[in-house]
Amino acid sequence: MLKTRAKFTLGQVVRHRKHPFRGVIFDVDPEFANTEEWYDAIPPESRPSREQPFYHLLAENDQTYYVAYVSEQNLVPDDTGEPVDHPDLPDLFGEFRDGYYPLEFQLN
Image 1 (cartoon, helix red, strand yellow):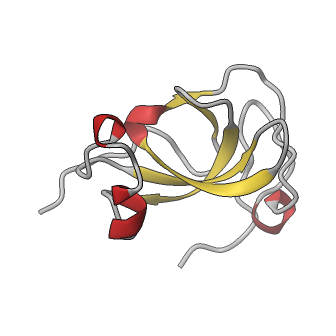
Image 2: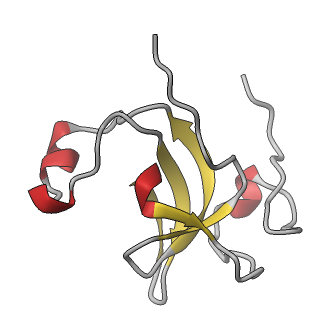
C-alpha cells in the first residue's frame, strides 16, 4: 500500500527550489508517474527519488509559460503573494486570493 502524503495542494502557488520558475499545482501523482525517458534525462546527481509526490504545474518564468512536472523535494511555497500569469489558469481555477487559486471544475 502506498503511504505518501502530498505536502502541497491543488491551486497552491509554489516555486522551484533551484530553478527560476513558479507555478500553480493542478494535479498530483503520489509517486513518479512520468516516462523513463523524462527521468533518464535528469543528470544522475540531480535525479529525485521516485517514491515521493510529483506535481503538475502551470508554470511560468521570465520568458514563457509551460507545464512542469516537479518532485516534492524541489518545491517550496511561493511567499511573494503575487498571482501567476499562466494563460491556462482560467480554464481550471477561479480568481487568485490569499496565495491560492480556488478550483473551478468538478473533480471525478
